[in-house]
Length: 428
Image (cartoon, rainbow, N blue to C red):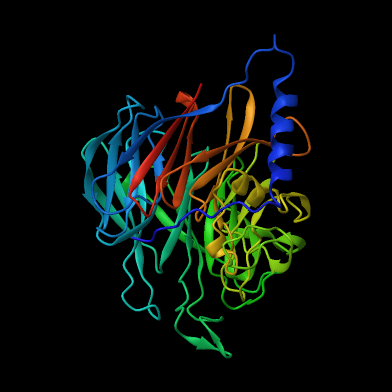
């Protein structure tokens, strides 16, 4: 298991700490003001099996479903008592699960399953699990290697990113793991109307879109569906985002995620945290989420391009692809202020902001930004002003991979890949 030791904070960072403390004081207001709610740690639960990667939950928020790719299973956890989660068992899905979502009827969980044995011949299926019976009741061939899955509020369509991921050992144009590598990925669209036996699947091609770096090889990574059944799809290695109309089965817009140019990054692994280096790198977003305003929030992890790389933060995009706001150095500096910036990754992709969750609780629009290498989640208020406001840094288990807000119960849960835990927080 990889261990990610925390690095000392250099003397250059206290200005960030001071600014953070000042923000907290100003936010607190007069002594007579009501203390705003915060997310409090309720439990750290080691799941049965090997790992916990992506998570979903039943609509009542009392059962969490997580993927365990190492064992080819999805696991179930009883969250009726958030301070005392309880394992409910697991279900084999016939391959390596990459993502899961539970339908609003609470009966079915949809699991994207990778069955690839040769990257040149990718394969996978959708496993439909009857949750009350705890059994797979149908598998649907997807024609490729899946990654992320999502179902929008309408419940009509499931969108599945078929990545057909690259072989990172294959040399293309003198680049190890370079692109293009065929077959090309695409988006699968499953029509969920009618009984499970009647569900059908279509595909939307993503090749040749404006904004892509490698038009022949999209490499779709993550998908999120809004209330209009428009899927936002990150094409991570292409540093691009595509918007797909699921009802019409066509791409309606695509754009480059652009480049980060900064002089306040830490790009040197030297056991000293100092944000004074130059960084010019494509954002290469991993996760994406729609906001209630109809904007897009991305976690700019980085992937293919030469290191030091990665956007090292997160971005708010308008639907036309223009950047409304970018975190710049502030996200990594917030980690450093808490002693959670991983200096050993400075010459790679830094804190690797990988996951995003957006949710409204108690009238506040929250954005949760997960740092895979910082073992933490940054919590922001994104609804009260044009500029997101950092509220908290939540320590999690090792390498938070899945982020889940359970609005009905005012809970936030992470699935932590490296130590196989669920970290449970409550708004209190």
